[in-house]
Length: 243
Image (cartoon, rainbow, N blue to C red; front, side, top):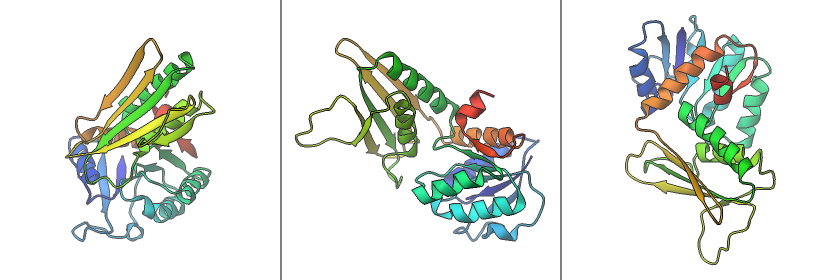
């Protein structure tokens, strides 16, 4: 598999590069980064060679650029960036009508499993209070994390009247339909997500810890291998774990 790695100069670009160095079947044919002058390519449009897929770990603001390139070359695209605006999300959806696009706020198989469990628990305990807590390193820009929102959106599939409350302070009595979402930013935390489902009589806690950023690189490469075999459409981690 020949991979164009967009955002190759960042932390996750380094993780993907390190992982692929151990996989003889996969090769980075173009390492691209707009901000890192040491990269072979600063502009993705400059690469004209053969490729099978694009893995994007750049920045959500570059979504129009990477989508235009992918569509122009009819290449499958794995979107690993977070914090997309509504306009950028609309671009991703539109592109998926022409090319295979894999889009997930979190590339971990463990998080996909947690989302599935959380949805089932919310359905089984319709009157339970649900709170989501996420923790990341002190350099993360967006809060709450895209993953926390992905978990909440999954729960909302069965709690259709749910309303998101971001943090609490002052006089803030909890309403029954709320899903509380709380963000912690500290140290070098790769990523922790916890879902608390609590009734008056019992409490179920679902928790996922990313021990290393390598887990996201592993998921991105698995997504790339998966999407290379698919027709145009919008895919996510559920598509991957369900085959």
